[in-house]
Length: 186
Image (cartoon, rainbow, N blue to C red):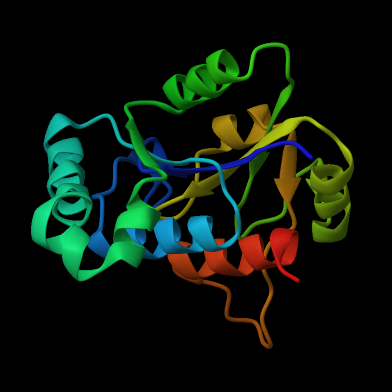
């Protein structure tokens, strides 16, 4: 079985007017996706943001739970934050994975609430994760999603998460938890 990685992309992403922007790093996304990643055996959770001020914010939040009182008070949070790394770009995260695992193919798997070409079903991706020794990087976009050009570069695009009705605008942390459960849950 290969390794599974997660990247939360903050730039470039779309806003509701489909303009390219950078979103802010949020405390809840850091915490919840780190916890989901640890629960479902993700190797590393990359938080991707080019802004130094936003990276500093993330470091302060993670530092509280990795060192001192926060680590003592909640060892589970400490364990989850051990899987989190910051990257300025998606390419930086991809290169780090490739250097860590030379000779292994890394497949990127984008997620979105919209349908794209090259869509893969959850059952097919789960089978690939279980049956191959290759690595997979799940890409989650903040805001209104990863820009089209980046989506089209992905090796696969997961089918959107659909709920009961027509409403389809989950928080990224909720979508990540659902998707990780579909790919790695018992």
